[in-house]
Length: 228
Ligand code: SAH
Image (tube, rainbow, N blue to C red):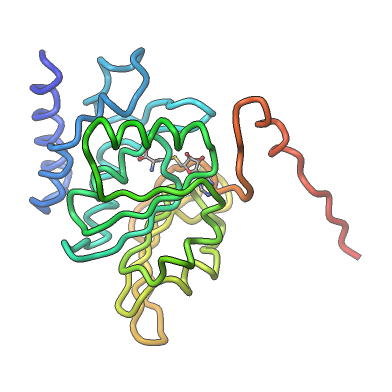
């Protein structure tokens, strides 16, 4: 079966699983997922599974990308902030649905590869930054939508502050990889409406940045705080 045929089969599977927003399905159909994953996994590019992308990170499962994108209720004039570019797949899917995607990644290497893919695919409306996504992107705020693709124990307050009126923010929230749930926050004036959507499993949102593979171990040093 060709990659193209496998992609069509995957899109049909996603529709059966409840991703019914036609714009989201066509965005997924337009983005070649094989471009975003290491060559060794190309034959699995259109299976509904998460796959490794290096640096201990993963490309999300297509159904998770589909559900999250649908839950974000993206419109064509919107500015969307993504935390955790990873290989760039989610950003590429969003790029077909909104005006501009701003995406932040803490691993410099992953970001370089993602940028290369956007160039290859001639995706011109994704702007990226190497940095700590917990701080958001204040210079570009407010955003209509914010999506976290790494799990946090709680949403960093800076991100809420950077969400515009009637904005939606979605994030995997949980203390361990076993108790995460995807949460949707809707801004209603000064109030927040919170909905727990589904259980998910994402890599953790970590602070700081990582310059390259060699310096990676530095990030594992933890501060030992003593309660007094
Ligand atoms: N959106 C990706 C999934 C990425 S996995 C996709 O489409 O496949 C989550 C990513 O979040 C990882 O690449 C990880 O390095 C990144 N990440 C974790 N904490 C971060 C932070 N504080 N700032 C920016 N990126 C972060």
